[in-house]
Each structure stands twice: as C-alpha cells, then as structure tokens.
Image 1: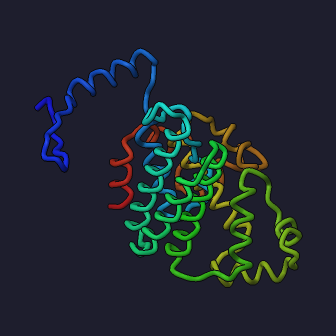
Image 2: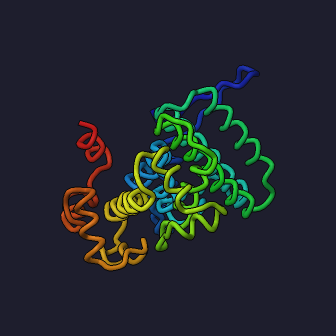
Length: 267
C-alpha cells in the first residue's frame, strides 16, 4: 500500500504517501551523495557498550551529526537531539540485553533524555552524548565482570582507558592516583586476577582487533596509534592473544557481515 492511515482524536483519517516520501528521500540522498554509516561499525559500537569494553567504545565512538548521520529535522540543534535520543534508546536496549536490570536501564535512559531536552547548544549535546555512552559502558563493565571493584581499581581502569593510545607505565598510574606501585599492583591482581601490564596489553590488542575489522588502518598505523614499541612486538602480542596475525585477522573478518561474525564467535 502506498498510503499509511493515521486516525486523529477527531475521528478524521489522514493518509501519508510513504512510497512517495521514500522515493523523494532516496533521491535527495543520491543528489547529495549521502550514505548512512556502515551497519557493521554501528553494531560493533553498541556491542562494545554492551560488553563494557570502554577502550573499544572510545575507538569506535563517532560524534553525532557527522558523516553517515541522516537528517531527521531541518533545525540543526533539534536534529542532534533526535539523534541523541535514538542513541540513548539503542544503548539502553543493548545494555538490557547484556544483563542490566531493565528498571535501571530505563531510569538512566529517562534521565539522559531529560538532559537532552534541556540542552541549548550543540556542544552541550556532544558532551552529553559522550558522557552518556561512557556511563552506560562503565556500568556494563561492572555487570560483565560479575563483581564490584574498589574505588581505586575503578580509577586504575579509567586511567588505562583514557591513556590506551599511549605507552602506559605503572609508575604514571601510581602518581596520578597518589598511591604506591606495590599497593596498586596487589590490589589490581586481587580484583582482576591479572597484572596491570598484562591487562593493558590485552585491552590494546582487543582494541586493535576492532580497528582491523572496522577500519582501513594498517597494522603499522594501529601499532603506532596504540603505543606499541614496534610493529614486530605488536604482531607478536596480537598472535599471542588472538591466535593469528593481524593480516590473517583482517583477511578473515574485514568487511564481513557483523551478524555472521557474531554467530561464528558465539557458537
């Protein structure tokens, strides 16, 4: 059917010609050379939030209103608000699927949507978008780990996430938190069951795998971007954690459907 009926409270029925509206929309997009963001990358971003992988979330994070975002409203500010509400709704449902209590997720969603409505500038919306994403991801990190970390451990995890693209030294973390290296090392091992350096390497490799699958960066560029001492060391660590080289990983997973990839890895 070309028309979609809508009945008003008065009882009068209006018809919207959806077929014509879609044709006009597609034509306008072709004229402007507009294409929506790749589905695989979008899903990978929401999956990273759901899994609590803050490092990958920050790597895949895309500001609202840039390339690949549709035009939902002629008013630029309102357009950003609409996109933010959509993002909040998507993240909320992915997090519920990942184990967050629905009441908690919907309450967070309500709060962020109310804050969206109160935004008066594009900068406020962009800041809220980032803060909302990080807040949901941090909560999912706790849920996925199945335990409550100490405040100091959370501070260490946040420091690592914020500096993942640099060479991270335990001494720098200790200085930032005003704690001793031995104390932080013992606490981290107790809470996460691994050393700080091993955790950092693992998170760098997880992020590298996402970049290989969803970007055109070379292994050398990714190695440099994530602060590895050399490309050879990066390849060695990638193979140790993933089981194959970065090239083999790209050959196997780059540009494949996320759904196929997801089914393969979930068995």
